[in-house]
Length: 326
Image (cartoon, rainbow, N blue to C red):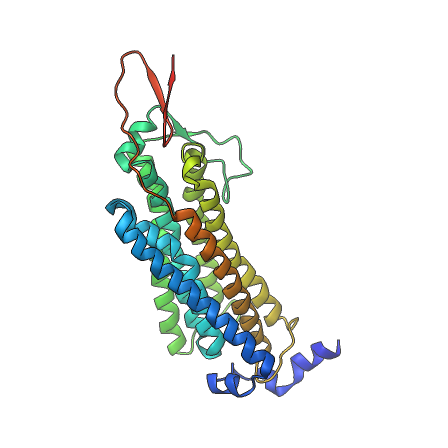
């Protein structure tokens, strides 16, 4: 109770986040070592990503280069932005927006990656002929098993892509709008009242996020067995882990900080300290995910064999073999 009262009533806890020079000047030996190690982790994450980009550029087919670079860059970009926010607390809003906007694009790119691993739009439609998509899956309709399956057509595939693409586009638009409103004094992450712009923009982004994740989940449920030999299941797990850690974990810590549960420690306000804790956790987590992701995507990208039309034979394709059914 005493610490909570200190957090709520100490005037230093109501100030803005400290400047970078104030952060540097208050570091003790432990703080210097901690910040140095975390900065090294973020730097190594970006160097590993750059090395992976060189490998992808040389070894990966042209139709997959872009999407794989975008997807594998999620963890290093978030780690780098978190490191910048840790050193410059007043830039946290911008670093978080950059990370969130990048991940919004990754959501769409991961959907495209699964389609390209099958062989592209035409190959996916040809190999999924007479099949259907199960739409009773998370995060929207996991509790609605009675929903009918949707036939796989070019139109349904376009709708899935559109569902994820809208998040990438609108997230960028809303980020720019938030920055414009912030410069005019109308946007503040600390303002949670119904009259503030932040609560409405963030709520709308939350809805867009759920809508965008749904098509990715639908596509994964459809292709996970066919792409199991390409390690699509652990790749999807890493994608989901980045989502949970960068969005849900950060949101929980920020809510605790805004409620005063996380005590302020001058020069850090309660909210600034919450942001710092979130950033430090993310750097470590994204560093580990970067290394795991490198292993998952480090493979020889051989083309998937084409299907031959065989009379009176129905074929079910997996990435590395064709199973014949009489």
